Image (cartoon, rainbow, N blue to C red):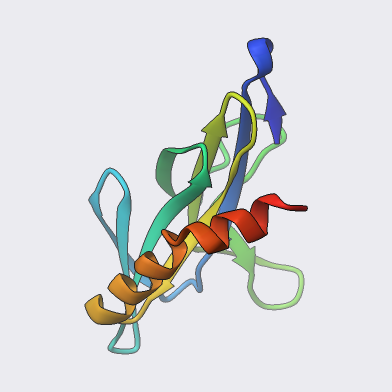
Length: 126
């Protein structure tokens, strides 16, 4: 979580996928993942605020003191893997996540549920 000047707030999150997962970025806010013949659609969403980026990172260690796109492999080793980095930003309250669905109808159903005002009110009460 990063607080910005002027009351802005950005929440950054990461989803680490298994090393053998094939990942394709389909657009600015959509990723398709495939593993062992199975498909998974991944779409960042915002309930409060707005989605502020999506990035696929694989085996990146070019910044001093940071590594992204690795998971623990054999004991004591790191294996390159895809990490999805996404963010939700707002001037006040930020709330969101990563929608994951195995097919189009499931994704549409989840998107409709996430868009309901009752869910937003429930999540914002805390």
